[in-house]
Length: 299
Image 1: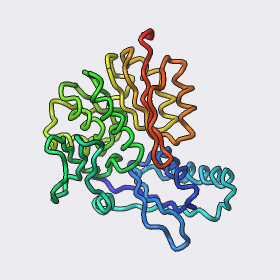
Image 2: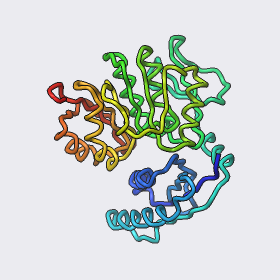
Image 3: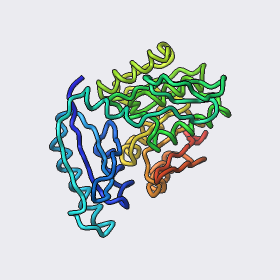
Image 4: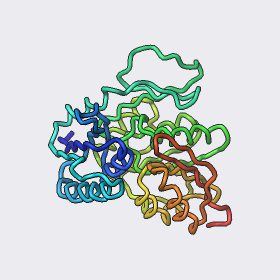
């Protein structure tokens, strides 16, 4: 595994949600919130593949200028530092605060290295995850909310074919395999290191044959999905709306996450034209995830 870029961003607490969204928008493969600095600022560590230096040093400072203006905060209250870190050191960073958690009584997400006993229902399904360098431990609100939507659907819908866009660690695709035991699931991600993590997690959970991961783009996929999971960003979700409609069956569900609370209205508007309706919204820590359905009159 290659070394990675580590971006350290220190921000006033009031801008925490916007800062996290900016880091994801810039393509972060994982974000870790460190201890506050001596000035009381939130400190985020975000990981990016090598070769993204120019993009980051253009996009992040520009985003901070906008943020400073929006919150009426001096730009000097923000701090940014970019460095290269060895992959093995960087991977260990994500393990520090990861602990088992339940999405509902019958689904637990457990770090692959966890050895302590769980206080779980004997009937609960256990998904073991090592996020490695990929995004998706389940702790971030955007992932947890997606898992919650997925858990809720499992009790009320039959979804034979499921697609996970930007699968990261594979956590959503693999959770879908446990919650929908007869479904065929595919996960897409363009990053080769991320795909390696997802495949390793799949094999560790003995789900080979149930879940396939590929780097092929959405444009290469054939129609016929009953559920699409998309924990992305508002811009990416908006750009993908025509392709998502093309491959999703009428009446099918789109679980869209990676949205700040105030971005939900923009997403609804972007998907209204293609024929989607909002049926459920969940929010946590300033983030939202929505369940949209494609009208049965659409084709």
